[in-house]
Length: 362
Ligand code: SAH
Ligand code: SF4
Image 1 (cartoon, rainbow, N blue to C red):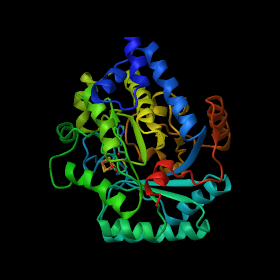
Image 2 (cartoon, rainbow, N blue to C red):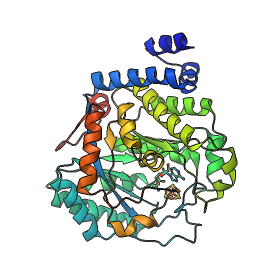
Image 3 (cartoon, rainbow, N blue to C red):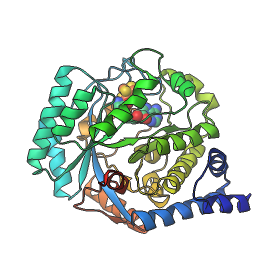
Image 4 (tube, protein in one colour):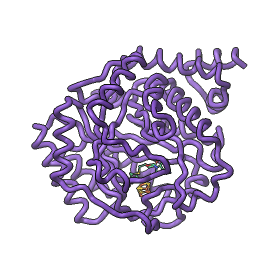
C-alpha cells in the first residue's frame, strides 16, 4: 500500500480514487502525506502563518442547521450581540499586535437592520485601522446587493462553508426548506466570487454517514469552485441539536481529528496556493490541534478575540474551547508552537491567498 501512496503523491493530477486511497492511509503512510503537504506549502506559499482575530459577533440566527448549537430552535441559548464599541476595542487589540486581519462571524440574518449595521461597522473598522486591516466575513448567505455593499464598506474576504458537497448528506444535516437550500449555498460561492471577494468554503469532517468518497468529493468540489480559502474542521456533536441522535454512528473523536488533518494536507497537495485555516474545532479536541494543522499544510490561525463575557454563548459544539480570551501569554505560546512547526508569523501583512492574486492577475 505504501508504494501506491508514494506513486499517488508523485502524480500531478489526483482523481477521486487517488483521494480515497490517501484519505484511507494508515498512520505510517499518513506521515508521507503530511511531509508532501509541508513541502508544497514551503515551496508555493512559504513558511508563514497568519493570525486572524476572530470576533463572534452574535449568536442570533434565523437558521436551524441540525448540527449547530446556536440554531434558532435551541431555546436554551442566551442570545447576544457584541456592540460596535466592543468590536472596535478588539480590533484595536488585533492592530496593536500587528495582526493583518480579523474575521467577523455570526449567526445568519438577512434583515435590513443587520445589513446596515454590518455596513456601518465595516466603515468604522476601516476608519480605525486607516484601511490597513483585512476583514473576512462569515455571516452566511446574503443577496448580491448585500455582498456588494459590504465589499464597498471594506470587507475583502468571505467564508461560506458548503458543509458537505453531497446534496443528500447536506439535507440530512439541514432542514429541507427554503431557508436551507443546497443550491443557494453553492450559488453564494459563485455570487461572492463574481462580486470580487476572496472566497472561502469548507466542510465538516466526520458527519454521521459521511464516507471517504464524500470527503474526496468535497476536495474535488473545492478544486472545481476554484476557491481561494478553506476552513474545515471536525464535526463535533452538540447535545441540544437534532443531529445528536446519530451520536452512536460517529467516528471516534480522535479519528475525526486525524481525518481533518489529512483533509488539510490533501487539500494543500491539491490546491497549492490557497489559504487554509487550522480550525478552532481542532483545538476543541486537542489543545495543540491548531498547531498540528499548521504542520500539515494550514497557514491561518484564528485566535478568538471576542470579549470573554460572550464566549459561553457562542456554543456551536460541545467542548468548544472557552479560552480565557487568547491572552498575551497564550498567544506567545501559540507563536512558539508555530515556530516549532517551522513557520514564522506574518505580522503586519494582510496575508491574502496567493491563489486569489494568481487567478485575478490581468
Ligand atoms: N452562520 C454562518 C457562520 C457561523 S457558523 C454560517 O453558517 O455560515 C460557522 C461554522 O460553524 C459553520 O459553517 C459550521 O461548519 C460550523 N459548525 C457549526 N456547528 C458545528 C458543529 N457541531 N461541529 C463542528 N462545526 C460546526
Ligand atoms: Fe446559524 Fe450558521 Fe449555526 Fe447554521 S451553522 S444554525 S446558519 S450559526
